[in-house]
Image (cartoon, rainbow, N blue to C red; front, side, top):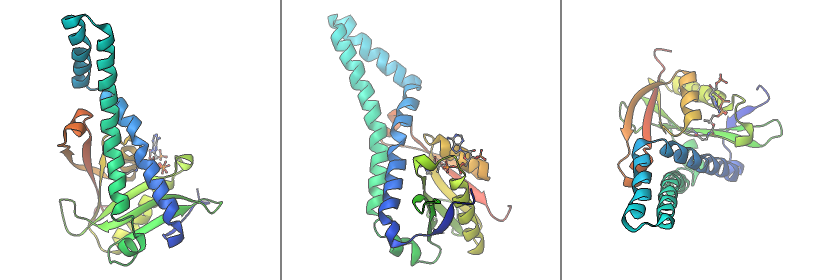
Length: 223
Ligand SMILES: CC(C)(COP(=O)(O)OP(=O)(O)OC[C@H]1O[C@@H](n2cnc3c(N)ncnc32)[C@H](O)[C@@H]1OP(=O)(O)O)[C@@H](O)C(=O)NCCC(=O)NCCS
């Protein structure tokens, strides 16, 4: 693990960072779909759309077509959520990372370099606008390239950010993630973040796949 090096973001990392972030977000589409398939309201929906054409006009073909359409709708709902999340970030804070994160007090951006000098992970710190307090730093944009996961890189990035927050005399680090991101949930709990509260999505497509936002908090004063 010591062969991975955390350093501040540089302009030459721009494309690598945007690629890792985008791949990380897009990678959640499948997880969102499989979670949606386990939800009772979606079983019911699939059963209804299957039985309706069969019972009313006796068409098995239409029944199968309806099921395929619902499955596609579930896939696209998850995809739309994570793709638009990535798109929004790329047009917002990830458009000019140096200006957004490195030229403002309370903000920072780190990357991890592999032994081969390749950028393989990233995390950002920002002054929190999440509910709960002014002296909080928000952990954002945590992402590790798929081929380098499970090697402790995210833990290293979390510790770097927590140290930054401690030096900035913040009371806590907060973050927002979703119930779809199992690896992230395990990571934050392992580090010592505690569940602070949950926000339910309001858009129809998000409710269909039941994407739930989870806010986590790491109390620096208690650690
Ligand atoms: C979540 C993510 C950042 C984890 O990165 P990582 O470098 O693989 O994580 P680490 O190797 O540092 O693992 C840290 C802890 O998380 C847990 N964890 C991470 N990935 C896991 C997995 N696939 N299975 C089980 N536990 C996992 C482990 O408990 C691990 O601690 P341990 O090694 O002491 O048991 C990475 O999977 C990722 O980039 N995902 C896509 C983007 C994303 O979801 N980002 C979070 C945004 S909120």
